Picture 1 (cartoon, helix red, strand yellow):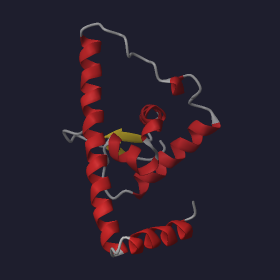
Picture 2 (cartoon, rainbow, N blue to C red; picture 1 turned 120 degrees about the horizontal axis):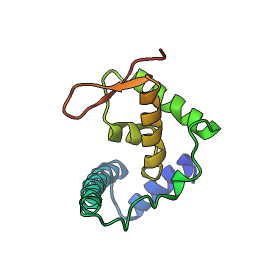
Picture 3 (cartoon, rainbow, N blue to C red; picture 1 turned 60 degrees about the vertical axis):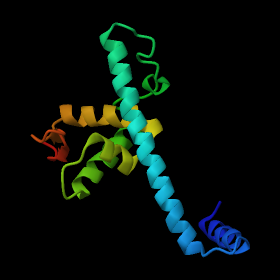
Length: 143
């Protein structure tokens, strides 16, 4: 759906309900932000549970990501993602967490590829982690 069509439909729907479209939009953004925070909290909990399972030797959920098979570090897709990550970090005025990088350049279904790209750029010395407790990532350039 184009943005223009979305706007027309959104205003029309709000008008039918006798509501101010701008006020409805603000409330909807707040609700979406709440749900996204909930989703982030669930992702952290899932990660902790998976780590727990791994610690006790249960490998039920280990390496079932189908994206792992078709993503090579020298593929065109990988090089494009390396450029995106590098550019995003260069443009940032501060070091970023992995989650901030993922949120800034990709979607949650690309987590594996973005994390792999970050590791690859770290091994090449293009990026590095700082000394903060969060081990944020910063761009240092090509060596």
